[in-house]
Image (tube, rainbow, N blue to C red; front, side, top):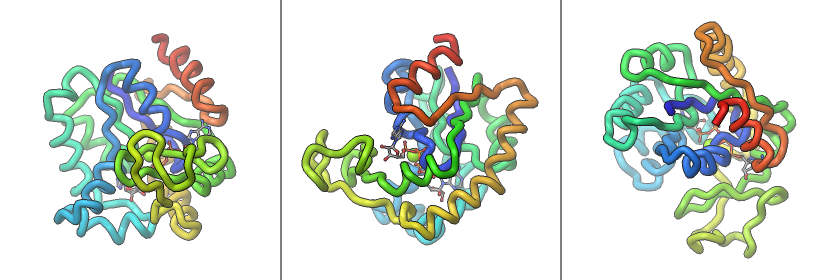
Length: 209
Ligand code: AP5
Ligand code: MG
């Protein structure tokens, strides 16, 4: 199944995707993760996008579309995928239609306050990328990943000024995609406010899987 996960920053797209990829045996492709890996590796892409991402703004469409087009051409993405965080603009959504046919767009419904609460407590493993939370999912030992022993840190764009910017960018540039995909009959809404086990139940029901 070819899925898009659409929703504001902090909605829990990445957290649910980790569960769904096991279930559907499809790759989880997060543009945010690809960009953060590139930044950590100090690659040309990472050097190009670091300042934009840290400020909570969007990377330009041309760069992002080329990246996703290349990733979706790989063998493991032919039968299905979870696209997390792409598309984020109408131009990206229109470009995607030229190189892939999506089955469903899962819209994560969460309040602004709910998203802020999740972002402000998020802690991420520098090595394996697992998302912890200071209230909802604490690492057993503070600052250390339960799974790989990596350092657990605060994402640069989870600092308050960048969070405000990201939510604003979402409302202006990404939210119009809800209407875009609704008109195409592809949109499936899920309540993203409960804990992840409950969201997974709602997800399966909504997609009839
Ligand atoms: P990206 O990494 O995609 O960030 P985002 O969309 O802002 O989303 P987040 O990763 O912040 O939130 P999430 O919904 O995945 O929540 P999570 O599961 O972590 O993008 C980063 C940046 O890259 C962008 O700002 C932009 O600059 C650039 N970029 C990426 N894609 C782009 C594109 N297409 N075009 C242009 N630029 C692009 O959960 C959050 C926290 O809540 C965690 O701590 C988690 O443990 C906790 N949590 C999750 N679910 C629950 C739950 N159900 N109950 C309790 N706690 C929960
Ligand atoms: Mg994410």
